[in-house]
Image (cartoon, rainbow over all chains, first blue to last red; front, side, top):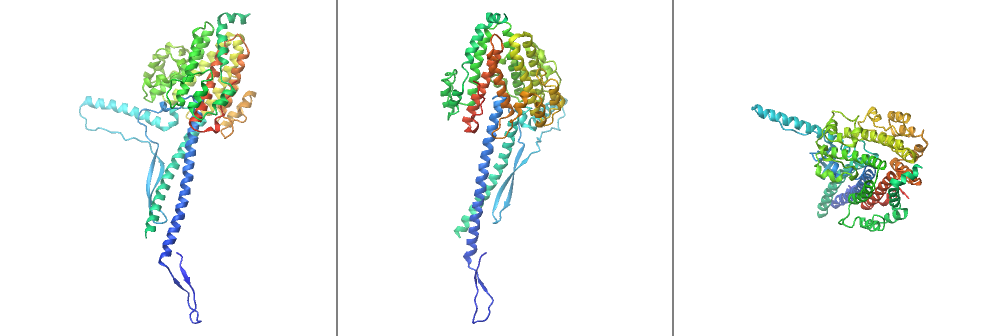
Length: 203
Length: 348
């Protein structure tokens, strides 16, 4: 907090310096620092968005290269399972407070454990129904096993021996996912700082 | 003497395929194609080639997959016309060519069934040259034993299925093993058939098929790093009709990383040249591109000799490379990623 410092001597005697603090100076400083922080955040956001676009572009290009060597139908939507597929990553949202006491939501990508919740029925008494349920349970277990295998390595949907370009495409899309979460966090933070700035300007 | 006898049954067809070969896109055609801004421009420029108005009835906006399908359709019509007029031994030779596509179709349908895709969605995606009776029954098979007993036993692929039979469930890895095992048996059988024909056909086809076998061995090895495929299983997938057999294949079976694979290639002059300068960095050609280039060279050279069946195989492979080139250019245009648009393989 900058202050107006006035030093002076009174009547030739040494006098301790005294400070006069103007009430508007702290507000100006806050506004200045907020403005600088917004510019830094904006710069980071633009860079991240640029990198995100670059990763996506290169990822799709590598998919095209994979289609060149494996064939158009080998790398297409036809290879994606129709059965329920579950996400291998999830977004974690956390409330955070920035340097200026501003609250915003940050987002991070984390891996899921890949487990599905099944349903069990323990109250059947009829043998036929129980046998039917057991058969259904076997089928469900088999389906779950197939789904778990399918979701273990999604790249295997296209080829169990994936070419290098397909692996590169996968890693680029993974990086793009991380950047997307980062961009979302930065945007939230920037929006919160903008609101704070507007409220300070109104004072 | 044998050369003149060839003309009695196959002279007309050889003349026909040489005429088709002259319609393969040249460098000037590719220079026009790479300057296109949109897929409609590409369609316009292809009208002035042998392809003509093959995309005339396709609605805008065009898609790359549609272009790929229509390119293949034209090639299939030409091949089927040649096959319909062929007599022995050319008829069996051309049938051998179709077995490779049958294997690809089988794998496509099994994989689709594994992913619960309806058969009606999968059938249009099958390669027309690889269709056979009962092909739609493939999706009922859960193991390779069922696949063999229900469908393949009555097809020409039955003789190639010997080592694939097992009670294991069909998952992605097993399906890939079945594909490569079938292809290994098919390639070795085709090689022996061409060798049996002898003469110029054997002189032309045996090196081409030997290279195909070696290429598969290299690609399987490189792609298997970081997967669940064990070294022992990998070694069983290598075709044995190439130059790498037996020492090169044994060395490849022991390889742990791409550097080991490159060391194996050092012992073979042609393959050493292919591995030099190959890489995934910007400005470098990939190993697969180098293999495609070498394959094009072998297939172009097949037309230097007359009175043999190899020209039919080589024409098909060259047209497939042409399709890949056009699709590559179309992808670069569609994605507006023109930096690598010149990475096609020139043919003539």
